[in-house]
Length: 182
Ligand SMILES: Nc1ncnc2c1ncn2[C@@H]1O[C@H](COP(=O)(O)OP(=O)(O)OP(=O)(O)O)[C@@H](O)[C@H]1O
Image (tube, rainbow, N blue to C red):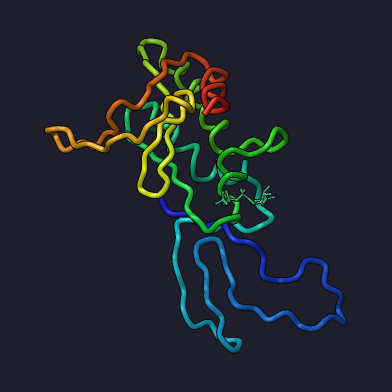
């Protein structure tokens, strides 16, 4: 699933006498349209487009929660935020104490979803790494012990990061504590 978060390109609360704001694009729930000289010239489609007035919780419930629930059922899942600097990746993924982001909500739902399968045993491990300038760093080891890690391929073609710390966790509070440490 590919979703897009957009900021408004109109001046919020602009008065009627203000200079008309030039519109460069318009969006609906599933697409964004480039506007050149008042005409739509190019359109890009997404599974969902979230506008500025929509909250992180709406985004989480709309696109991330189903993935989290399926992961607990045994499917692989990835939630990936991509965008230019200051576009809101950290705000959306980590959130604040008042508006929790995708990560704390996902962690909470992993533990809630596990309760739906009392007959199954789950083993949860958390890793936290940074990829910066082509260098992979383990964020769960003390900073003075950190060294660049290698990305390797297993015989079955699975890709893994060698020597990456994996901490066993049994509650959402433990996961968030590890993330805070990182
Ligand atoms: N939806 C939002 N509502 C309110 N404030 C927001 C929103 N998205 C981002 N911000 C604010 O905008 C600023 C930049 O956001 P943020 O740090 O999340 O960007 P980023 O994409 O993670 O940037 P970088 O790539 O530089 O780390 C922050 O002060 C953040 O609180």
